[in-house]
View 1 (tube, rainbow, N blue to C red):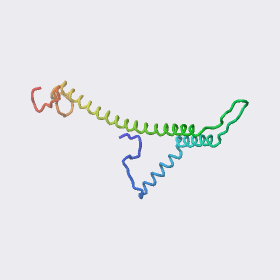
View 2: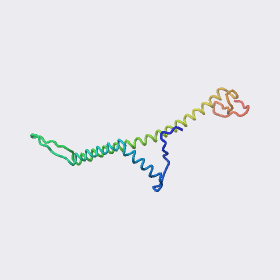
View 3: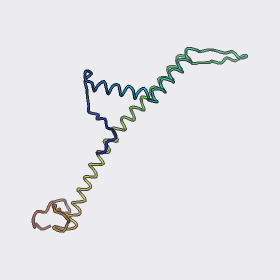
View 4: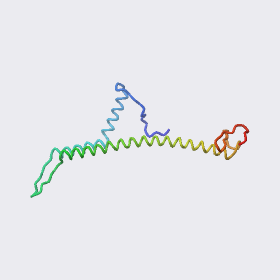
Length: 149
């Protein structure tokens, strides 16, 4: 069986078990080295810095705003966080769909093999196929003994 991961998704531990804390620590460390985490931290830090250090600079008769206001901060951060966590959920759903599709394809291939066996035995006729197996008619009925086909 070819698995994409060696992690069993059906494992559940209580908070008092050692395995829970080992898995929690592992997940925590992978999260700390995640690019997504550092991207979120950087975006939030920069936007907060621009919010806190907002300045208006007058150049002649024109005013330039150096920074962002509260509405811009909320819009930017909710958009970035929503995109990242939304994409995470989309990938999670697609992974589950891919696993289900893989199961369906395996079952479909198994069904096709069974149909091929039935067709081959019907075409070759009783007693002519290689190996010891059942003989079937073109309608899928098994021929037992020396019944007429």
